[in-house]
Figure (cartoon, rainbow, N blue to C red):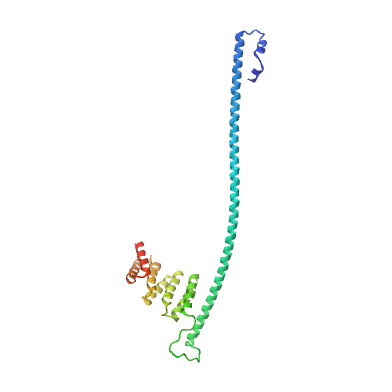
Length: 273
């Protein structure tokens, strides 16, 4: 098509021996104009196509820029998170070290308490074997004497501390000593109740059941009696012996209507019909 542009109608006429008529010239001119129009349409189409491609390239370039910026922000966020994690890990390591040191101190204290308790028990055994007084020493006048060794408050506190720290056997020994030395003291009923709790924590439910029953039998007028009934019903009898547990809770409600655990017993029965 471009070859038509380089040849004018005059040249074409000359090549034909100048024999063309005016009609032929007009025909050639019309064809020439049509060819130029077609070329213009082609050029416009090419320009439009190129413009569309430039717009697409610009759009893709903008998307690439946005993605690059987003990736950079994400990378910055990751670096910040990594730094925060490093700081958190350092803090946690410090806290774990502090906890481990505290545990070592507590274990040392527990060991010392055990040694003190063993020494106290040894002294108690010596006193029992010696009849409560040193050989050759007459008993003081005025009747009975107070038991030697730690007092009831000391034994009670020792038992509770060991129970809280998980030394259940050591706790039970302290409470047993208290009940032996001070069977009617103010801490007796609570000590027996805690012995039952220690057995529950050791998963020895049969022993705990026996102790809770003894609390009710031996100390029926104390606050520990309804508490022992509630714990026995809910921790030991339920759900394997539902009928017995319900009967025990109903007895608790009847015999101890003003006890703190009476409301708990009513709520338990209401929620476990």
